Image 1 (cartoon, rainbow, N blue to C red):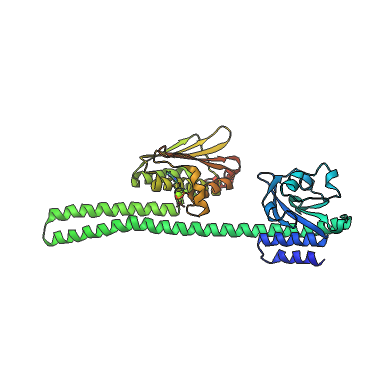
Image 2 (cartoon, rainbow, N blue to C red):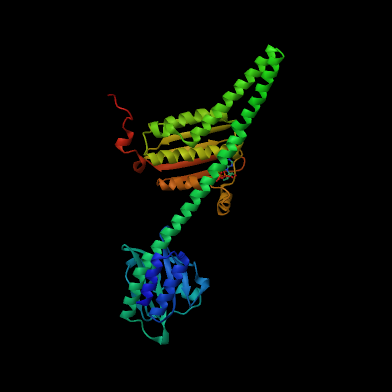
Length: 398
Ligand SMILES: Nc1ncnc2c1ncn2[C@@H]1O[C@H](COP(=O)(O)OP(=O)(O)OP(=O)(O)O)[C@@H](O)[C@H]1O
Ligand SMILES: [Mg+2]
């Protein structure tokens, strides 16, 4: 009871996931007088069980080892969602001797219980070799099952908390980056142009003071052209910050305006190709697709040194929206970028990929040094289409 209470307590305190797992396992081993144990969590993407923490036995070398989720006693428990006692593993054909051999820890008897959250297996708690060669009893099994029930909820809780914190940190990093970029864009763009325009305006005054009308007109033309350029850039910045057209009229009209602005402001040419009839997507999907295209183009501006960029949207026959952004610039080796993610040096591609995943789609990058770059986003249309009300006309004739 005391052990169960301790776990229940960690449910409401903010211990780290790792500490929590250690605490659960330690308690499990102690409560049934086992001499060793392991807590394994299920990785659904690879369908493997991962040895998260080890107590006694093979010890730390086994940590983070993986095994197929349907192998061994642990695999049986994970697959069936039921506890299992095996008094003599050598007599049980479910036993998976690889782990025991590889980590040179002899297992004799095993008691293993599933970690269940709302009926779903998230891992297993396994204890080995009861002390004094005793046999694990059904009371041991029931005790460990109660402990596992409390623990599973606590683990889920800690995981959610951890995800939330990671998400929060990433959002902060993205926001910081956006501010930086904005500051830099204003500094290098409109601020510099306005400084030049002011200079020219002084020349105009000078020329007027000397009644040199021709010079004044020449300088005035320059002031006008600079002011117009600054205005264009500020409009682009505003559009990037909040593409109102996107929300009012949808993705395609917003992209048309965007491509037009880029065409005027960038050193590379920008072509927008729309193939087929693309209806309105829901708000989240439109914002995400637009943001992916923005990031791809921002990368072209920053890294590609390209002459041409193409944005192409296609609806495929199997019901996907395919967005391709291609440039003929310097290219790069995509396999090198995940390293930068670890150092949090660049977030652009990572964020694009996360946006794609959040819409049940995926994002791939084809590039090689000297060969240009292609970013391809594929989204299933069905879950991302606008609800009928959203696509209804925004204003009604009265
Ligand atoms: N179109 C491109 N042409 C050439 N290199 C590119 C292109 N797109 C991306 N890269 C390379 O991939 C790297 C990672 O891009 P990513 O968008 O993730 O980060 P970043 O642009 O450097 O920084 P951030 O997007 O976080 O401001 C870039 O630093 C650049 O070296
Ligand atoms: Mg980038």
